[in-house]
Image (cartoon, rainbow, N blue to C red; front, side, top):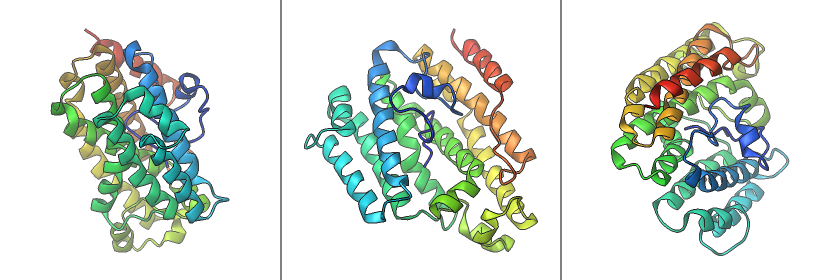
Length: 280
């Protein structure tokens, strides 16, 4: 699973989230964020990484994955040690902690093998796997609920983009398909097409349709930086929007089955300029 809204949990070093963030599409543990909230953000990151590792362990049976997720939730309840308990100590009880609990809904779906029936199902998955990340960042910065819908749109877009990047690996390694199943059926693309070395015309049609819907989410999210009072978080949102648009454009032009498509160093440099422009 890849968490969006500024956090990619797969393949990074959980012991050093500041270093890990540098190699990810949409880093969450950014130095743009207010210093007072960084311990809370790092605790959230480590909780999400632990849950991700539990849900994505290919050597574990679904029951074992779910048991590990249950242990993490007990930590949120104050009944166990580990990353859940550490997050509870960092943020205390309340809405911010509930965003972490919401993530577990998506992780449990992943543990059982997620396959999205349609776009609505994918959006519902994103509402648990991605939206809580953005809302957590808003809450710990003291932002109001007025930015939630825009943040949800951006986080959903980030999540879908990450899944389009990884459609082949998600299917081959974990048997998961996040592309809408009804769109696959309408295009005549079977799940076996996800394991090919290049996208078939039918699968390409599904990818393009998914990217079209994701582009609409990015347009919906465009006003988000202007709705955020915190300078650092506003800059982070502007940089993330820029990178999401660049990744979206690259996925429209490239084939994610033929090789990993990701933002370039130049994209990251330009995202820094976008962040600087949002600081005043």
